Length: 190
Length: 190
DNA sequence: TAGAATACGGAATTCCGTTTCCGGTTGTCA
DNA sequence: TGACAACCGGAAACGGAATTCCGTATTCTA
Image 1 (cartoon, rainbow over the protein chains, first blue to last red):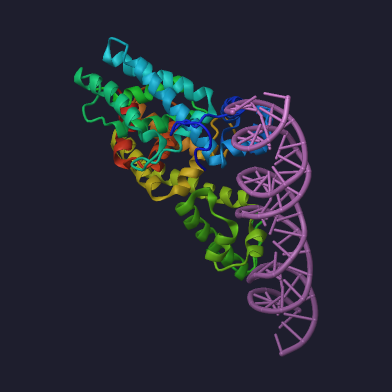
Image 2: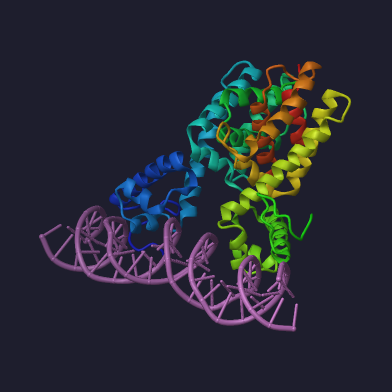
């Protein structure tokens, strides 16, 4: 458990090339598998899909939970990117609209994302409670609030809870576009 | 509960009194257990809490799924009762308000209800798709719609999806009252 | 290119919740 | 009250998914 040969970076201990490649493959296969079947996918199946043995899978991710976490982090990052893109819209309200609809559409596509959302335990430490995620949500929200586009008591926590609900409704089979409308109606300033 | 001795109904084959008692105990224990820990509770734990052996538990409910279903049916019934009570409110919008807040409060109490809601697979046959449940929801909604209190394109399916989302958000730790507000804002006529 | 370090595959094992089984108990009815 | 059926308890078998283990293969460094 330490530095044997050459100067490994504290965070990125240089992996052997095949190891790095396999890690990527596993992540990709897991992403697909989770998108299709949610948390229920089995480790051996993921390994097979990645063209890798279970042993290898477990060397990279000591427990299933670790793999899930890695994927959730990806999803969080993707969500952050969407928020960042929302900020490029000139109109603050349009940004919100686009953001909600985009999220709804993405949720409809990936069961993995929905499962990822359900990891949320507001107020607890969870992958969504990143400073970065919080900051971006605040940016979109603040701008809309300043423009009097949304109710002015809407917090980032409220937002996360709404996204969580949105995800659940969509998971239940509701029409994503329609649910997005409801969320928009809920946050819009009356 | 009812007539103990004799007169077995076609549906209710008369159980021996101890059997009936145990059945009730199991249901009660399961309700508590699910409320506290969701679907993850284990059958032996439920049996223990009910002061009963696993064998007995399984005689009454051949599989865990059957037990869950029995509880879900209870929840559906409870929800129907709430809707019925909502109808006693004179003002159609007040009825909706009360209904949403009441549901939110109930959901906050029981994680079991949340899991029950998540059984939903809209459009599929599920415990929530009862004629009775549908009819009651329609009654409350129609009345509010006729009074122009809610958006006039709101369907019973929409309503179920919203309740589902509400439940998820609350389960994630959101403030029930606040989430109820959002739902109300979403359905209210602008 | 040799040798050491690192990584690999996948059968075997562990783990754990569900379900079965059956000797013993209790309620019911004549 | 006695006889019988219905019911009970809980140890143990089962099933299936997660995880470990270790002999072999690949990569890296000199």
